[in-house]
Amino acid sequence: MTLRSGLSVRLAAMCVAVSAVFATAAQAADPVSINIVDVAGNLQLTQKGFEAFKAKNPNLVSSITFTNAPAPQLPGKIKAMQAAGRSDIDLVVTGTDALAAGIQQGLWEKLLPEQSAAFPGVLNRYAPGPRKMQDIAQGYGLEVTYMPAGPLLEYNPAKVTEVPKTPEQLLAWCKAHPNKLIYARPANSGPGRTFLMGLPYVLGDKDPLDPINGWDKTWAFLKQLNDCIPYYPGGTSAVMKELGEGTRDMTVTVTGWDINPRALGIVPAEFKVQAFDNMTWVNDAHYMVIPKGVPKEKLDVLYKLMNFMLEPAQQALTYDDGYFYPGPAVKDVPLSMAPAKSQETIQKYGRPEYAKLLSDRPHVVPLNAAAMVSAFQKWDREIGAQKTK
Picture (cartoon, helix red, strand yellow):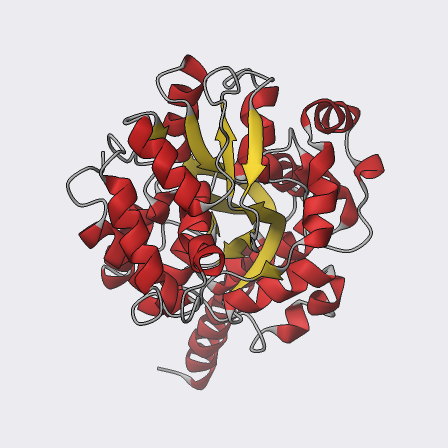
């Protein structure tokens, strides 16, 4: 080989290498497809916001697919996906249930403080109540919606004339009206888990934050209540359907699950709610989390998307039809910023008594991840084992 021909070969190889680098860079800059899985009913509040991001950023996002799944099934699915080296899910919107399970099993990317540069000042955006709920995520997710939840009782006033105001009165009513009280499995129900976590405060248990060693009164009460409950549906929607159809006369609820089914006509508008006399609000939230294994070119887009969802315009959409009342997690997003339909719905179906209850009664955050998983497992094993559908 001559010097000239050898040089030509080397130059050609260099050109190929440079072309490959440019091709890779161009490929990385191409718009990405994003797969979002919702295990909390959250898309009702956020899908329009996600779609707005795509519309404003066609250079970043080519498409977004939305899927719904039950919270208890998601961790196993993601674990199997990660073990196979696949990345089929890019973003999960979840309540505290799958958030906790995923933290415990090491499924989520750690966002804070590791990726703080991608989320400048994010913790300062949250209002005081939501800011405390953000700590529940332990840095593995970003809170996107907020609700001071319950526990509350919802009932048909035509059938329930003596409304329970204490757990003891609830138990007595349930025994006197067997099969007329129902609630859903806590591991897949916001009202169910809020009731579960709220009882230790109402009953005066030894340690409301320790479901295994500190909830003697709660577990004893739930076992007694179990005797007059027909079965435990797998989700809240089934509960509200039975309540609305008249199969059941009472259930446990939270602010959003009170307002929204009445606004949608699933539950009659005239149904009432009652708080326990000495209730403590167990607050609730939804979070955006990223499963481990998502490629970097998607991560950069997802970080931008998550920041976008915390902007006031997108947060105002989360008032929705009261499903997760009030909805916004960040500061300075009053109802007046919400779409006109949301304002009308909440003015019509909201409860005037909520404002006083929210200001008068104490608020707490839910159990931490490990304790919540333990509580769900104990409930499944000792309460719902034979009656969950």
